[in-house]
Each structure stands twice: as C-alpha cells, then as structure tokens.
Image 1: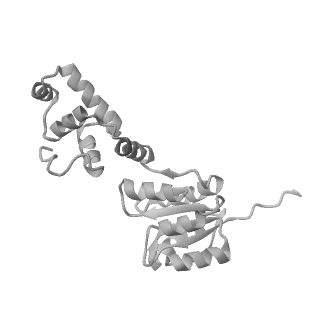
Image 2: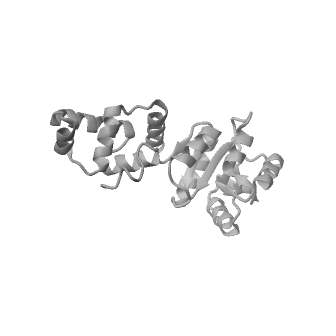
Image 3: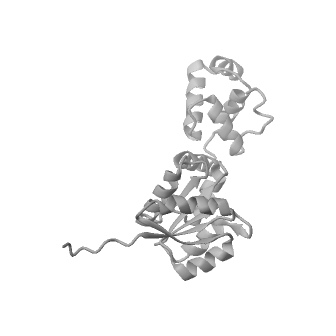
Length: 221
C-alpha cells in the first residue's frame, strides 16, 4: 500500500451572470477529476463574498457583470495575493480587454468562443503560475501598445502608412515621395514589423485600432 496521499482537487469559483453559462462551465469542470467547482456567483459582490468564504484555488470570471466587471474582481483578489489563479472570460476581442486583464493581475484571458478545453487548461496553468499571464494574441497586443506608447512610427513611416491605406503600391509610394523603390520597400517592412503585421491589410486594421489611422485615412482599402 502506498504511503502517498492523493492530491486534493483544485477548487474553482465560477462567476457569470447567466445561469446557462454557469451551468455549462460547471459541467465542463465537473468532468475533470483534478478540478472541483466549490461555488458560483453572478455579480461582483457575490463573487467577493464567495471568495472570502471559500478561498478557492482558481476564480474563473466573466468580464461583464451587472454591478461591475471581472477586472474589479481580479484587482481586488490580486491585491496582496499572488497565489490565486484568476482566469477571465470575454466575448470581446481587441487589445483593450486583453491588456486590462493583464494589467489587473489576471492569470489568463480566454475568449468565450474558444474550446472548453482552453478554459480548463487556463485554470490548471493559473494554479501553477498565477502571475504569468497568457492570452491568444498577447505578443502582438504588447507590440502594438509599445508602438502607441513610444511613438515608434516616424513621420515618414506614418506618411507611408497613409499611402498604403490609400491603396498605393511600392512603386507608386516611391514616385509620390521621390524616393527609391528599395527605400520605400524598407519603410514598409519596418512599418509591418513595428505594428506586428504580416501584410498591408493587417497593418491598416492595427493602425485603425490603435488610432494611428482614422477611417477617413483608410478609404482606399
């Protein structure tokens, strides 16, 4: 007979204001032998009360709640606590919720359209590394924030970005600005690199989302 005692399951608190979502998440976690749901909540207030009573290993919370946001929960729990796993779920895309979750101290951000296995894996990972943030598209979002905060696009690059948005090709940009094709090509490559984009379309979308371009600038797309 082994003297090694079995590990206790990881305890989870689920926070979402929709009964069906909570029930679905509970079903997902109940199928995992190493995870057990010890409580559910539908508001920020209920979540904080349940957390104080239950002290779960992991909190999985929706972003939007009737009396606040999952960000409020993450900030409140993370204040002075580096041990609890904090996983946020959201149906919103873009840099804003991702960076807000990271800055608040979340362990992970998972889209509600992601496979249920992603939520389970995020919960498991959050127990092992609560303060190491994970999310799809994180590196790209960090790159775009760095570009915004440091103003990494030069005046010339911004000018070329607008010409790209107008639909001009490398040769046309070179002629418009009286520069060589190779110089224009180098500028475009640097713009893509700084914005974390793979092509013209991605660069324009990122530039619009980060305020480097307005919808008026992109009428040529």
